[in-house]
Image 1 (cartoon, chains in turn purple, green):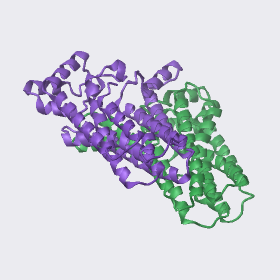
Image 2 (cartoon, each protein chain N blue to C red; image 1 turned 45 degrees about the horizontal axis):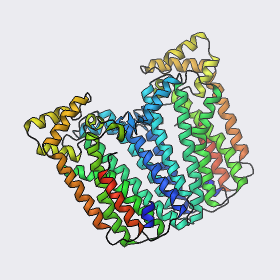
Image 3 (cartoon, rainbow over the protein chains, first blue to last red; image 1 turned 180 degrees about the vertical axis):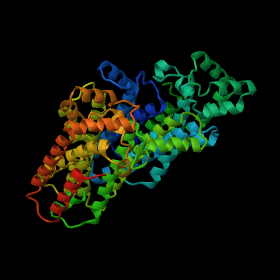
Length: 295
Length: 295
């Protein structure tokens, strides 16, 4: 949001921080509900909201189904965070027309998040998922919402500018997809102590990520058997995960995804070429960070 | 919303309909999430969103946990409805200052809904609930959100007016609580074919409604035993419900709640006295409807 605003040529403005924080809060809303839907126990190295509320239930001497109390409370905590995001945006110290333009992008962003999340849920339940479908989820669920729309929101605060918007879209979609591909890689090969997420979650959930779909295509009969047996198996152990990592690495799927990642990162840098000034440097750094982060 | 606007003395204005519809959509959001939290199977005589999505899961040949797919999908459907409510409000054909005043009330309303819902969830898990606590939930969860805030939202569209706001608050809080008390009565004594809700849901959930808390206080040893055995028992049958109805009726709890209802309705009418014109008549009718509806 901040660098989208600076990309319009504007100087630093404190008023942009509230809309930026609104997007951050919205992200928290999405994570809280996502963790409920994925039944994840950990986020950022700490218990997820529903897990934490389920513990509160026991500790406070409440009665009934502790787990369901956690689910209900987390749905509401997410809903409240969703409203607070609005409140932050509405209260921004900016001209009313700027807030109104920002709000329009904010709403598009929110509709896309829900569409992307539902598509993700739906694909997770499909017997077969194509690479195209997985890439579309990566674009909608992460690309648009994590990078492109926040940039456009910041740019909209600066003023309407169709040329800048198309440049930021090309950049943001590439960086956003790279971010998601890295997420998939870290979900299998990452270090839980730095990612803060359980490294078995994606496996247990049976996520057909772009990485996993590449592995299915590239591996041999024996490898496919391993993947079919362990993907989506709630009893997956760390030893099982190690077997999956071997298959994914040996067949060249990891290398293929790293190539995709590098290509997206190149696209992102090229998209920035017409841009000058501090926003360009910051956005180049952001692209590197999204594609090559370890957390 | 509509009559809150008219209560300012304003003539009919089409532009008010979009914010009114936004509140209706917000209500739908709250019902969708509420049904998930309460694990209700029916709403308005039809399957709830999560139930309906769970059936879709089976029908579309999807794999995995159908019930959980329904829960995830319903959380997202609620979230999407939440955003659409915003979109309707933002797009209203009204002066920007009017939309901005309306949005402020809309946000207060939404924060109160979440607080009231969480209080409800929390009380449902408490071993003991006092009558005061149950009345507070009725005020926060239904009173404010269903009647008072929508009226204030409509009035805010007309313009700032502290005197009118305090009148509408007195009226709305009384009508809102009456609405909730009637809801509790219908939840036990209503006809599912007209209410569209399962008549055993409240019982199975173990809701300590104002009605139920009165019954606990007023009934004898034997009656209390029946209530303790059946309230919150997921296996409750229609025969069991009939036994609960007998206890609640015989001990005078139903009559006590009907008296509370009539008192609230009187308060609501008195609050309207300074008001003149068509809004007063409409709001009087609304108070009757809330207190004495059968659906």
